[in-house]
Image (cartoon, rainbow, N blue to C red; front, side, top):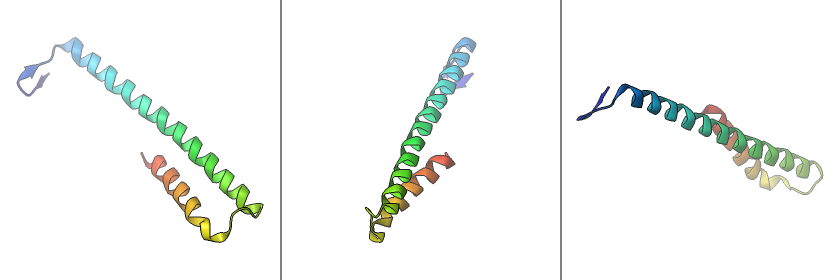
Length: 75
């Protein structure tokens, strides 16, 4: 494989592919963790709202959490 002016030996192509796969798996794992945090935040917001600790003018917090969750789902 040639990248620019350099020729990469075949075994290094395999190492690069393995590195890229591991990097992608790590990103997916982090995204899953972030989604769990966001979902816990949504659940807490709903619980606080139902118990009257949040008034309706703070719905923007819930909206931001939902937007974060949707964004994490897309990627």
